[in-house]
Length: 462
Image (tube, rainbow, N blue to C red; front, top):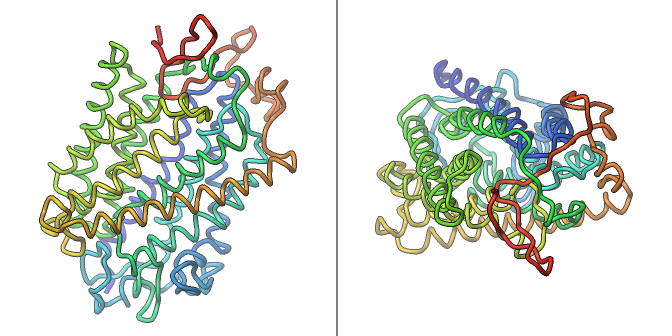
């Protein structure tokens, strides 16, 4: 039976998640150099074009067709959107199978195309998240090639592991190993989206190397209002990301919506407290970054924890991500906009804390975490899922990145980096000041201050 209200909610949620990619472009675009802002916007925007086409051609089939091999990849039976229009999805469309550990709220089915469009938006934003790790130094067409191959061999298979549940696409359909064999909990993509993107971002930062002059010359975000606008658009769109993952306009969507709000608010506070203690002042950039860290961390947990648990997750994530962004200086990898510190660390925090804060009083199809009498079993499952995705994404991205770089198609020349990749790659500039371009990219953290012997130390933005 088709429920028009649920269908409308899923389609509206898909539109909200689509808005997150332009929001991310503003968030990242405000943090980069004024002479590379268009390149950053384009690296995000092009994901809408590339991934949408691939999703229809084979991405949806690779992800949600019945399993082809040990829970690792779909068999492509829905490639080209075959057998989608006019068909319904939702545990054999009759809720006869209630055994799968999926937050499915009832007996009403969804049009397959409505579900496919909702999941498409997840596929679009995941590679877009990676772009922040290589800001200011990537060739546009090299990035496009990377997106094509990466979503094909990394995102689509991992999404199959996490999002494809037995029986959802038909009575005999089989899904991925994390969802159905391991039974780790991930409500809206902490593993498939954020850990996946964060690990890939780390790999690409290593492959492309440091920007010229980094870490002494990190500069400052060129447009902080852009950053705050982008964070606000992300927060707004994230309600579709999380509450939409209930796939029904019911109580579970309300729980996810509430948890998304309070965890994000708590993370802002957690980040700003760390800034105050470390640097003596809370910053606008820190508030925006804290909000994103909270959104990332609550994503896998929002349908399994109480609002009080969400506050705890938010505060922990905000504080830990604020501390984690300094890791790039300690270990020497130039993660331009702190994809590792926010998305990898935030995704790990949220995924693992499910093992502590999850409760079946919120979602009977979930599990009880350690704090609700469930012991350590669920925490172990969460850890296996998190680190399996991290390891797979990191290794495959490292190999893919090196291949594209060796072919000469990934990093711009030093001359183009210094003069500005907007002009070099797109023959455009974002602003006309009547003078030379200026500014720099500092990510979410204060620029390091050189010591007397030239060594880079973390310091104040003053």
